[in-house]
Length: 258
Image 1: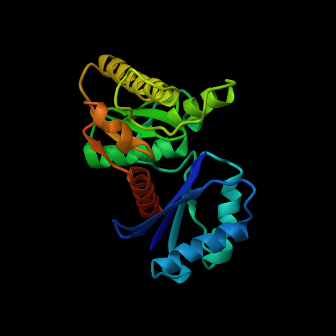
Image 2 (image 1 turned 90 degrees about the vertical axis):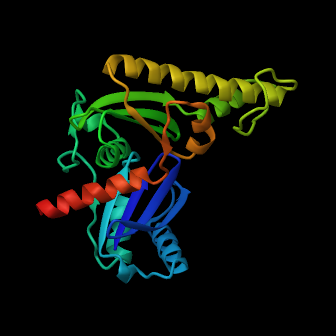
């Protein structure tokens, strides 16, 4: 079985594959201070909860936007999964999409995985919107080229900044308000965050479509995708596991080349 690990700024997402089938997924907080043994015990415990053991894991792949955690998880694989050496998604790894970024090394590994999965499952042109710590828009052409994209602050970052940089405004839950006109402070903040964010996403999508000259398929993923997507008419599907599927696809491409 393949264990795919996507290390994000806020969460680590893990998927366990049997062939092309995603059998289990887990998510836990990213913590730079956690030791390899702590991550190892966490992962083996999650596997046990799913009725699996480390011996069931024969392959691995890691993507990370937190570079210091890559050696940590390499040690986890080595110590807790029988000396397994996982593939690390980095420059030089085959992805199935041609990266047209000015400096391909600058593209986040999760964004590459999203693009690879989007092109495999939906063709192109396709835009993947990932509602994570930051919100990213990744654009894939009809020829399978990663054209680039957009990086915007995530709605959670906006909410936290408003709380931290003001004296009296409270921290609020990110939620869809009943109306744009808030009748109390919490509702007013939620309206500004939510509907302001809807405007941001729609405007960026409109400009991407104009520059492409054709209408792409639009796929959403990330922790807040289910909340935001209903108010974005262009989004046709929410695919929570697209990053993990992209890692599986990239692993298979490189295994075939090995």
